[in-house]
Image 1 (cartoon, rainbow, N blue to C red):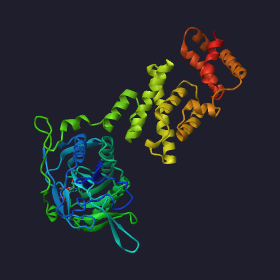
Image 2 (image 1 turned 45 degrees about the horizontal axis):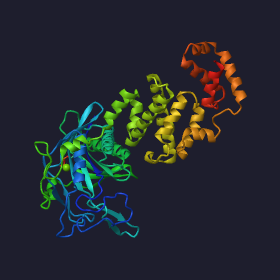
Image 3 (image 1 turned 90 degrees about the vertical axis):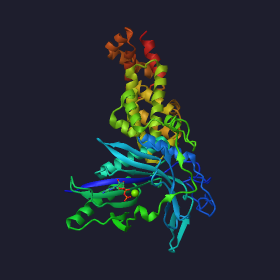
Image 4 (image 1 turned 30 degrees about the vertical axis):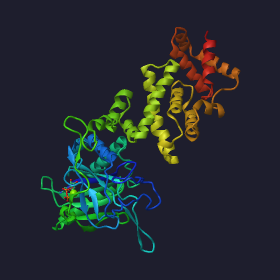
Length: 494
Ligand code: ADP
Ligand code: MG
């Protein structure tokens, strides 16, 4: 049986206002070709690059989040090659002095080592039309790109995907990259070889341009089988670059692997060596202040997950769903603080009330709200449902003034219109049994049937009132007006 040895090379577009070496906009959403271009990113002779400080700071922030050592000195190098989307004939990248080295991401029970993270410029984009002509769009040329390389510590497709997912989340939480794979903002390359356990590493193959987690998984699984067949026939695996063919569901050979010396790397003469921070903690000559970046590091997904579990008592599984998206986690946290406000106002804010409300919130958020988001294809950032309104609905459910049947109707309407729950309940006639006499008759029946609760209430137990009122809500199918219903019992039990 063979074991796979896998290392990843992951590129992510760095979020900055402008490109890496010039003042053109870094706008990945631009639809018109060749708008954000200038003599610098088109590589005209005599132009000089000016380094974007924000891009450097962003990569350093990613490095800190990933436990890397940040270089005191770093420099840029020219990587020379010819390709129609590379106007200068070389790419400004980093060769032997990357910004960050030696980090890791925890995957399952082990740490997957990060060899390095460096900053480089992206190339343009080729498009091929129906007549067989090729077109070049240089909007992307010169956009900042971070490249992260892992150690060959990964052994399975699962580990590779989990690593990539965790990295994606960390970059998104840090605001370094939107890292949307569908939009090409994050791209994965897989290096893979197989061996018998305990043997030396085998010859690796590089699989390029994998643009979804599913494809990363399929390519690895396919390649493990292919290499096993090659070795099984007594042949050798050829070191090469392969691509993923979606139709064939197979990796296909593209070209023999180039070596570092093929690129004739040499130091970029037009950019000075970068000094990052000073030994005394002050700012380096590039104006890069390490301490400031460290201090601005936001809470990372794993820390947030821990906190949600201990502070809010949410299970690990539920937390996993909530924190998978930074905006979802923020919405949820906002909801919890609004719930606390509502509870305080209602003077029923024991720890038990809080825990119960949070539990309802988790259930509705991870099922009903998510379902609405998916069905309508709404990004959570554009959702009309507000945390305030969501919290109000949750607390009403907890207090028994809104039944779960009505809550579902109200939630859908809140999601569709952004209105608050009390408005919707009034408009749709979901609250308030209109006939006061009918309501009073119901309440009297309930009082007669629940002697113990009545006695408890008369002995000062407020929860007993809540209990009786809950019965009224149930009997009126959630339509009793919360305020009137409660007052009714107080009146009848005087
Ligand atoms: P190259 O010089 O061919 O680019 P590197 O040493 O820079 O190779 O490694 C590139 C990537 O390949 C890294 O992610 C590394 O972890 C991975 N890698 C290195 N050796 C192997 C191997 N034998 N099998 C699988 N992956 C490997
Ligand atoms: Mg390499």
